[in-house]
Amino acid sequence: MATIDITEQTFEETIKSNDIVIIDFWAEWCGPCKSFAPTYETVSEKHEDIVFGKVDTEAEQALGAHFQIRSIPTLMIFREEIVLFSQAGALQASQLEDVIGKVRELDMEKVREEVEKQAAAG
Image (cartoon, rainbow, N blue to C red; front, top):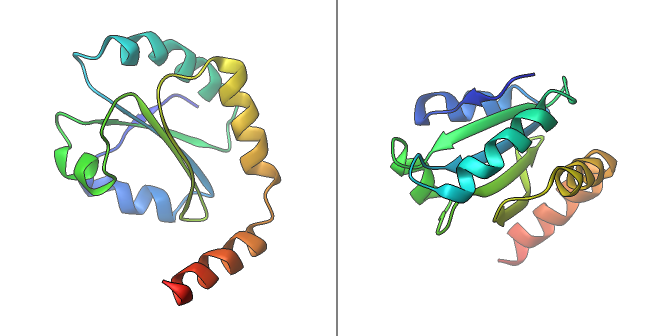
């Protein structure tokens, strides 16, 4: 699957209607973002069941602010509407594949239980 552009208007629906969503927060002026883009695109083509989105932090400043994006590129991975991964910096293809594998292996029932515990405690 090719990458898709995500905007403030499409963000919520994208997260709610897909099991796994990976988002690359980037900007046109960012050299590391441009270097990472082909890797991101290549990996996206190997995972038909995952949505690979891109958020242009210049055009979508509200999304960048909401997720407290301080440096780019930043990758975030959602599964069943829960943020499981958030990291600034470009990953190599093998690193991104490794993270995707770990996200797929997670027992989401246990993750939800942990999220509920943290919400109750905090």
